[in-house]
Amino acid sequence: MVVRWIAERAVKWVLIALAFSALASLLLIAVFIFKEGVPFIVRVGLKDFLLSSEWDPQAGRFGVFAMIVASLCVTFGAMIVGAPLGVAGAIFLNEFVSRRITRIVKPAIELLAGIPSVVYGFIGVVAVAPLIREHLGGPGLSLLCASLILGVMVLPTIMSVAADAISSVPNSYREGALALGATRWQSVRMVILKAARSGIVAGVILGLGRAVGETMAVIMVAGNTVQVPGSVLDPVRTLTTNIALEMGHATGLHRQALFATGVVLFVVIMILNALTMAAMKRGHAGK
Amino acid sequence: MKPAIEISGLNLFYGLFHALKDVSLAVERRKITALIGPSGCGKSTLLRVLNRMNDLIPECRITGSVLVEGRDIYAGGEDVCALRKKVGMVFQRPNPFPLTVRENVAFGLRVEGINEPGAIEQAVEESLKAAWLWENVKDSLDRSALELPLDQQQRLCVARLLAVEPDVILMDEPCSALDPIATGKIEDLMIELRARYTIVIVTHNMQQASRISDVSAYMLLGEMIEMGPTLQLFSKPRDRRTEDYITGRYG
Image (cartoon, rainbow over all chains, first blue to last red):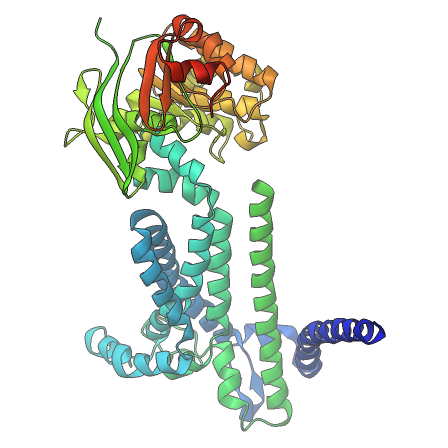
């Protein structure tokens, strides 16, 4: 009896420790990035850091404005590609095809999420960038190329969350709409999308978070020039790729500047997560 | 006068399961027809034949003829959406949409492409009045319909149906989620609506059938056992099986 009691206790405490270690690592990451990054921001000045586009570490110029703009543009572009496709796919799988087809297609699309990002980058370099260069001009490796690749990468996230939201809409709403003479599409547009709205928004924001944070594929296809893009065919460098490209050889102030870039990224992603939770919570309150 | 609905030789299969067996039925205009019988006897299935809601079930197959206002609704080329506007349905559990009270009632109009605010306002008020709900909700038309009490939700479902001006109203155990007082209100409403609409109701509740219906039909295991004026069916049933059921000796 005593042995069993001790074993129960031990298991409980081990599990608690494991659960808290996840929380602790999150906390440590935040502390670490902020400890390195915040002193830098204080030293250079928040305004010069955030609002200048000049990034020249050798000359001591550390302005990330162009990279913030690039990150936002790439993310926005990815959403233009991925969100409509993802939501449309979710509607299609739930409302317009038989369950048998859904059972095949949905896992296949979810499998897209398992492809390593370097493979997406590779496809971008050898297939998408040359197409853009030949047909639209510019260097090919560009904001457009990054948006297209990232759009496909966020597709499974958005589609799978949106599909779950749509399939959890009570069947009685569907029947109610159809019984009033609505067509399939009318019932989707007028009732089901409204009922599933919070879940769909959550899916889109999750996709957004993934697009902001993606690094490897973007390094390979975005061109990596530090500039505020004038057109979608211009090469750009995002916040994440900046860190990845320069961390290997950065020292001193330069290194701190990259941590400060990380702080900006951290804040952006926290805001997105807060939005996701708010959207989900509001959805539950509505039911 | 010809009956509003005439079913003859109807067979329905869910895959291999023979759910309705050679059912024939005539539903008279502006009367309440009650379908009664034990669970699984096919009465809800029969109701869903009338507005083709069974189309939603993939393995469902139908033979025989179902005439609504003289038209065979299972003949090829029938417009299912138009049929469902003519033959409306109230479900077992109140299922207002997660929209405002106003938009619930306006739904059928918007489906038809009517978006003119004046027409919507008028239809909303008339339909809510006809469903005896206007006094309860006239000050909260912009609140979510899901905040209403259950019996008001059910009357809202009736109101949104009336807005599309159907000929026939199908009710699938409309009171089974309601308490006796709310049930009484819905029953009174049905008797009122009988003056203008043909009503077919599925009910488990034999008292309810005897209180409100003009004609009753008793079904068992997918077969139509007996059909006749409610008074007669409940006092002098012709079939032994009907008698067993209404006297509580079924099973």
